[in-house]
Length: 262
Ligand SMILES: [Zn+2]
Image (cartoon, rainbow, N blue to C red; front, side, top):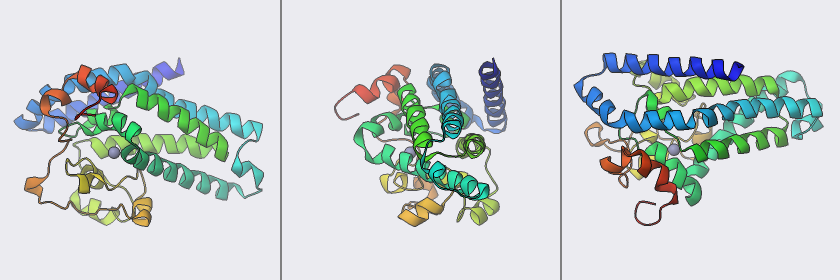
C-alpha cells in the first residue's frame, strides 16, 4: 500500500511538472512534446514498477545487511558520522561508475541509448529508460549495498536526493545560469547534464556523475562548457532519427537489434 501511495504521488508530481513545462514553453516546445510524449509516457507506464524497485530494493537491502552485519563497512569499528559519509560517497562513486559503464560496455549501451535518443529534454526524459535497464540496476544496486555494508539511513536519503537531482537534470525548469555556474565545480548541475545529452560524442562522453562533479573532475570526464557553439548544439543520437526515436516499439526492440542502429 505504501508503495502504491508513493507511486501515486510520484505520477502526480510528474504530471504537475510536465504541465508547468508546457505552460511556460513556446509553440516549438509544445510541438516537440506532441511528437515525443506518447513514447515517453508509454515507457513511464511500462517501467513505473521497475523504476520504483530501484530505490525500494536498495533500501530493503541496506536494512537487511545492516541487521545481519554483512558488508565491508561492518567489518571495521568506525564512528557513525564516518560510516554515513563513507556510504554516501560510495553510492555517489558507484552511480558514476555505472553510468560510465553504460556508455563504455556495448551490451549496457544497447539499453542506455534509449535514454539518450530523446531529441529534446524535459521531465518525461527522466524516465525514458528501458525496463530491462531498471531491473538490472535494481539488482546491481542491492548487491553493491550488501557487499559494502552501506548505512541504511544514508541509502534512504541518497535515493531521495538522486530522484530530485534526476528530475532537475532533465526538466525544462532551469537553474538560473549565474547560480549554475557557481555550483558546477562541485555539483553536477542541470546545465552540465544537458551537455551529456548532446548528439556530438565528444560532448556525450562527459559529465557522468549524478550528484557530485568530483568524480568527473577526478577521472578526466568533466566538461564545463559544450565544445560546439549553442547554435550547433543538438540533443539525441544521430543513430536514432526522429521516426525511430518517437516509436515505442522501435525503442523497446532497439537493444535486441543488430546492424547500424544497434
Ligand atoms: Zn548517459
